[in-house]
Length: 214
Length: 367
Image 1 (cartoon, each protein chain N blue to C red):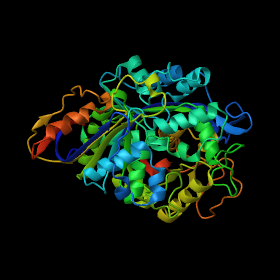
Image 2 (cartoon, each protein chain N blue to C red):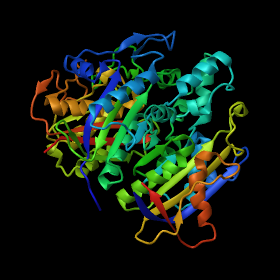
Image 3 (cartoon, each protein chain N blue to C red):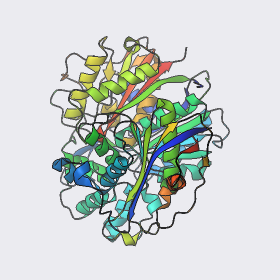
Image 4 (cartoon, one colour):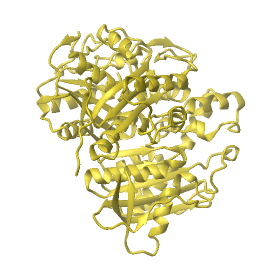
């Protein structure tokens, strides 16, 4: 079942190692909160800010979740050292959008998708379902932040150890001007490709209506 | 817009209390299946719920197979799979890392949440699949999405699977937060010690048509506390909001709720806030209990497991008692000490998670 959605805003960020220009001090003025943010959370709030989105339902996606927190916990257990409570609370896959909700006091539904290479495809589908359910603008974010020590031992999927893509969409009765067909986006993890297709198609165009499978 | 009704037409589960039939016997006879264990933390005792050490994935396939056998489907080729899990394959990654002190032989695909849907897809060939990971609301949110998809007519059949295995990360992580109980957990009890981490698998087939044994998934809703990463809003705003919206989504009045299957982890913070939410919202004071006193907290699987328990409570028209309760901290809410038969039209099942992620599901007898 397909429905049509207007893309209202888009944003992309990527870096081979670490995204340096995430504007955290302006976006997260409270130091205590800012210090607790994971790398994925910093990317998430930056992308949401770039899409001018603060209040509404959010669908977030990540194939591998909070890698640094996970590595910290497993490393501590292996070394028979105490686990940081902050590392554990930051290890769940919905950490980044939860910090976004704390930052903006956003009490709307947050869902997190983790479907391997199909993650951003499923984020698009789930975001479409949420937008159709609420008849409101929904923020979709997909992010991978895997810049941890010794990641080269397992990373064969991306040149960018930090990357994220975001868009907002609303249901529309207008004709679709774009169908999603997942292309390869060199350098990015495959989990981001479907959303990158949409975001790239929006570049230099005033209005894009995309047909999405629910 | 099209609005189909959504029916739970088949289900099966596996927890430390056994399969669904064994679980319901344990719930009604108040026999906790938690064991006191030191295998994950040699210096600390913890109540844990384990059913099949090293046999999690075969058990996953077996539970889904049982649901297929119960259903009228010949296969799952026209069925969407939605998995809810909070840990995915991290247990295997831990084992490799502890042994080799290296990530080298960790397969990222076997580490990810999607390892569960990959295993089920390999065994059954679903039409499509997706995985939700919102910590302890994962499979409750999977249920909510399944309901919305069927309601809109996007799918006729959705299999929801909640699945989480025990692993060092969760057991030791909850210990680090200081919320593990060294004993069998005692939800809603005054002076309770904490929660029991457990593993669980629960699968439910949701469809757009009713059968002779259907239970209706009438409503669902989510909310965010926007308060704290692990502590719930002490005013219970998020918990009340998701319950109220789910009851409205079901087209019901608050007083139509006849039983609440609580999230009820046994932690100080969760149970106090959840009891307050129910006290303030459901002023007709329906019976409420947490079946985690029997199963422990199965994390991402809990929403689906407790959805099955809610369906069984409606089918049996018998309220689940609050096991291990001597003196309730909240003296207003109705925590039945014994099982009893009564007319149960609608059940609310609550799930709450890290990040202030809240989900409520409303089940009903088919009219």
